[in-house]
Length: 219
Image 1 (cartoon, helix red, strand yellow):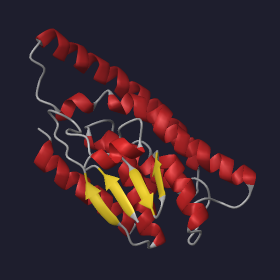
Image 2 (cartoon, rainbow, N blue to C red; image 1 turned 90 degrees about the vertical axis):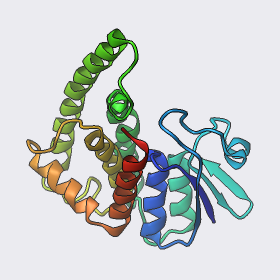
Image 3 (cartoon, rainbow, N blue to C red; image 1 turned 180 degrees about the vertical axis):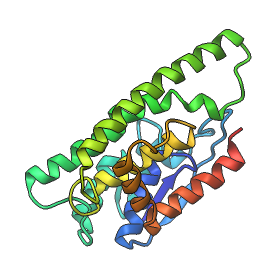
């Protein structure tokens, strides 16, 4: 099994965490990336497998897959132990909704903070605009944190046992924090959940490698 990944690819790290949790052996190839040029030059294997031209790409024998959600679902069906989705259609649907919220509801405002790892924009007005958008994004992130606090209540994980829901949400919250977004101090249940997930060797490894990549690649 081979995974094409990126040092600061949130979606690739989701797949890596799942692979580590399942104890699956895999070769990882980090594709070229810089903050100035992004993913360039594009890796030919990624271009061949993914029309979106993005990592992650997972190759398992004669099967090539892209999109982290598709890959996670495949891994849980092909290598079911330990399971990363709960049992039963309703529970699995709820798990998928949490991952979807991480990728498509919380992540969009988080991406508006990505300018914080870039050099200041040459146009002062554009830089001011980015900073204004960043403050607006922080308000949206805080609103989402409140909803996640309510959703967790007194549970250790979002869907009972540790699952894809926790992998996806952990990575998005990690990116919010690494981009100097809102802290979790006012959300004790969310903070405890984040620490709990982050203590797992799979998630800790991903977080450590992202921090190392930040030192090398970010301003």
